[in-house]
Amino acid sequence: MTLDIRRRQTRESADAALDDALMPPLLRRIFRVRGIRSPEEVIPGLPALPSPDLFAGMERAVELLLSHRRGRLLIVGDFDADGATSCALLMRALPQLGFTHVDYLVPNRFEYGYGLTPEIVELALRRQPDLIITVDNGISSVDGVQASHERGVPVVITDHHLPGPVLPAADAIINPNLPDCAFPGESLAGVGVAFYLTLAVRAALRQRGEFDQRPQPRLADLLDLVALGTVADVVPLDAINRTLVHEGLRRIRAGRCCAGILALLEVAGKEPANLVASDLGFAVGPRLNAAGRLEDMSRGIECLLTDDPDVARQSASMLDDINQQRRKIESRMKEQADDVLARLQSGPEEELPAGLCLYDPGWHQGVVGILASRIKDRFHRPVIVFAEEGVDTSGVRLLKGSARSVKGFHIRDALESIATANPGLINRFGGHAMAAGLSLPESQYQAFSEAFARSAADWLGEAAGQRCWFSDGALEQHELSLETAALLREAAPWGQSFPEPVFDGRFEVHQQRVVGEKHLKLQVSAPDSGQLLDAIAFNADLETWPDETVAAAQLVYRLDVNHFRGRARLQLLVDALIPLSNINEEAGSA
Picture 1 (spheres, rainbow, N blue to C red):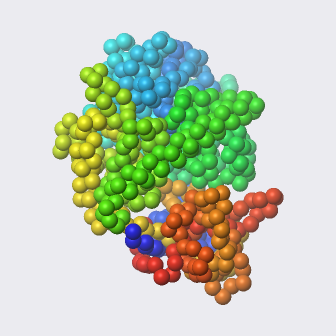
Picture 2 (tube, helix red, strand yellow):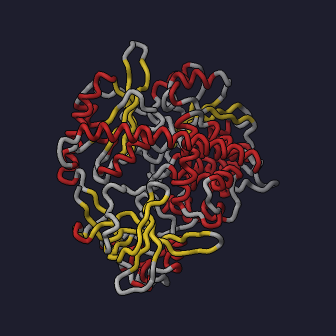
């Protein structure tokens, strides 16, 4: 595997306006290479957010909701953290806006599939709803919407996934990725779309004079849920999402958030006051997702809905237990995947297919997405992991795949291209550039694997399998400080498409030892410096990392503030540790 360190380059359009900004030079450098042209673009603030009126279909959706304000509304959610937070947000917001009967349904993913399927509609109709509202799903639910209409129940779809060639005939669709939508935030998560719906409903009620005699609901108090769902769904943190996440983080740090989020932070060992965006993605999100992956996402939603701290703690503890089960299943599946990969590798790593498909009949379909992500990170190529989905009505055994991609390979577009060129190969698919899901007959698995490998090879070319780390360059010795780490933590919410600052440099390695069986703990120092620095590489590949004889290496790292026993210390979070004899430095563009 090729190991490259590529330093990010300043974008031409992101230059002059930052020169006069009152911010440290290091921040100016970091923001420039992320395309920021002025300080106001980093976090525009709530008043600068675009209007809900820019959504196509918003006016009709609000009209439908208000006409059923005294009726029975049923929210049909998705089974991940974005879907759970979307559902919890509407369950909290709509009663504040005067809706009297609001309920939700998150069907078991293994029994009813994804989206508003006809089977889910049949289940939903047992609740006798007057209006169905989907959150974080529905844009591909053509048959489900038709089934609901046949029973006389209108449907409002709120979603953010990319639409297919045929839209469902819903009574209203709110999705920033619709071709005719003028809303400028295509990267909104499902919870962001749901939040905008509540803003539009409140605006309509305000125009009617609803709040002339009473205070209007403070919907910004729900931004803790928006921040959690947005980060956990790994959508790009554009200016809109950065604002939503920043405001949500601000509220969580101050303890002004729902009891469930505080309880999930507690079981994860995270202090709310020190929270950063990545904590939502790596500590809170997985515990919430575990319920939908293994059991019933309603357990996660109930955690987010309760206002009782004791109930929230019990719920969070249960979710933590489920997550521990998920980790054990994932570990076992990873070992089996390693065996499959060993059989695929008849030579060097570069001989692996450019796009990897893996399948084992014993794998858990709720965990295949995590496994795909792990293998993608390890081999730096798109990966689809399959598990058995069941048998359809005609007796055909189906497989369900979860796909994760790398930069330069739009996974959903690739699946569409494969499906178009090979009719009958894929039953259904959907997703984003970096993640997607699909279903296909087991008998078509081998043919699909070969088609996927060819597609990845055509798209990626020589880039397939090349692993590189994008760096913001080296830090001066005086910048290796607790103050710099704190500055970067507070500068912005970092995440997808707005990456956390990463640096590289040569360090002397004084000590290294394995802790917790899979983490590498180090003590290092910059050349010609007597300052010893703590460093740690989590989940290190201990088979390929250098042994104790390595005295100097190039680190790719992030700055972190490690809070321990009331003290704050600087710590380097190491993404890569490369012996100086195995380095290929190349200036590149992220």
